[in-house]
Amino acid sequence: MSLITLQCRLVANEDTRRLLWLLMAKKYTPLINELLQKIAKHDSFDNWCQTGTISLVVVKEFCKELRQEARFTGQPGRFYTSAITLVHRIYKSWLALQVRLKRKIAGQTRWLAILQSDDELAVAIQSDLSTLQTKAREILAQIRPSTPADDEPQPKKARIRKQSTPKNKQQGASIFSVLFGLYEQTQNDVLTRCAIVYLLKNGCRVPDKPEDHKRFAKRRRKAEIRLERLMTQFQNSRLPSGRDLSDQTWLEALALATTQMPEDEKQAADWQASLLTKAKPLPFPVNYETNEDLHWFLNHKGRLCVRFNGISEHTFEIYCNTRQLHWFKRFLEDQEIKKTSKGQHSSGLFALRSGRIAWRAGFGKGDPWNQHHLELSCAVDTRLWTAAGTAQVCQEKATAINKIIKGTRAKGHLNQAQEAFLQRRETTLALLDNPFPRPTHPLYQGDSNRLLGVSFGLDKPATVAIIDGATEKVITYRSVRQLLGENYQLLNRYRLRQQRTAHKRHNSQRKAAPNQHSENGLGEYVDRLLAQAIVTLAKEFQVSSLVLPDVGDVREVIQSEVQARAEQKHLGSIDRQQEYALQYRASVHRWSYGRLSQNIQSQAAQTGIAIEIAKQPFAGTPQEKAKGLAISAYQSRQ
Image (cartoon, rainbow, N blue to C red; front, side, top):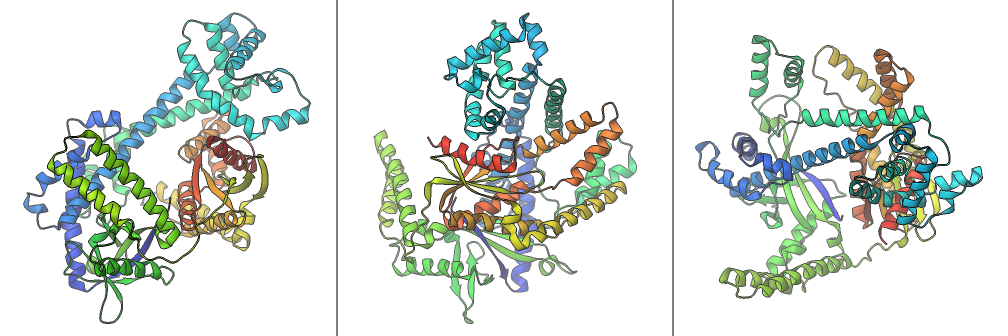
């Protein structure tokens, strides 16, 4: 990923701000809200929920109908285009999450259906455990050659070292899906199915110790809790509802709650959530997907300004950080070079890729266009800053265009529209041979065998391991204290602030009051410090890529582990279980893993370091997890 986002403030006169606010709040945002509702009522909505996809054509047709109504007319064409892409993107993401949730529920249900203790498996095969182990070894021999670790007991130190080796964990993970497939294919052979279950629950190997009944009971209860939470999450999922800038939804919920009695606890909880949820006071942002929709120039004061297609009669001045100013100057240079050369350069090589106008919440009283301020977000490709990176982009684009041209030519008997399409592609291909002048700077080149793995932990946000993939040896480790250095005190300060915020939120919830409390951006600042330290360390050791964990299931696994531990600690006492779980969650460090991952990826993109994603194991120390991530990513390249 080589794209980063730059943000700056847009400054304009009051008439311009008023016009833009009225367009975005009175026409653009209501249009998006109406589109979201129409999509949910479409006859094919259930089919979209099953497939997880939605056609962009459907959104375009709805928008074409709505733009004829008086309440949605008078908007620039780019606003309609932005509304279509934004609604399509919202529902595409929502449907993908629903399909993923269903898949997780199905997988967890299947796992619970086959998960059995050793005693239950012995009863099912009507024999002893040795018979089951013999059959399990036979199945392993068919899948991969048997190793001494599977058949022979080893000394204690060697056995511990063997179990903690990431390579062996990776081998077990690689045959896990094979065993699952074999289980589905084997329907009538009870012994084989039970042996497969025995291998699956023991990490795809035959253990040399008897099963711990308490540990198995805890493991099964964790799986049950995880399934219960997934089912609750699926049942409580809500459709995208847009933004209510007039607070009409809140007023309706208030009138409903004060005049009627709820039918059940769920309805009462929904009403309370509607009343306590703070509505977003700002309209939806407007996306400019094409970089030529933004026109850059210098005003009479020499300040950098921008105009947007559709509202080109209005001028906005750029107010940005000095560290980002060189990027905005590059946008102006690229545009002027193309204009001077009379179209001999391709806009596909502009450093600017897209833009977005949004309102940022402000403080004070008065009209909203005076209270809030405008912000411009620009997506840029960092590779297009240097000549070497531009050459790399040109090569990628040329390869893609040649593939399209070859595929279209292969169809034969092309009509006039297809011929015109090919001509445009060939013109673009020719323009790629004339790139914009860029400074000479070599691309980042790391050692292909060196990887940096980052593990995320419950009480340690990030732990780093740098390994040599060829030898699977660790070059160095770094803890979160070593990464932050003198800034480690900020982490402790953030933990204290989190506890205070949680206490305030708890008191607000007890009083049924709004509970939108935050840590004032301190956590995000610590994330940026961690990301910067990790990328600096990667450059120091010349690693080829950063390996980050897939954080999709981290929250569910952590919550299931906490609840299962509480149930095992205090059997039969629900109150004590809840008290223990509450104290345990308060004692460990809570972190936004997705935010930290995004910061690391953004910092790596500016340097040119590749990013790889792998599944993080939940067993072992943070150092072992980081090492296992890096080795797993290296082996997946083979």
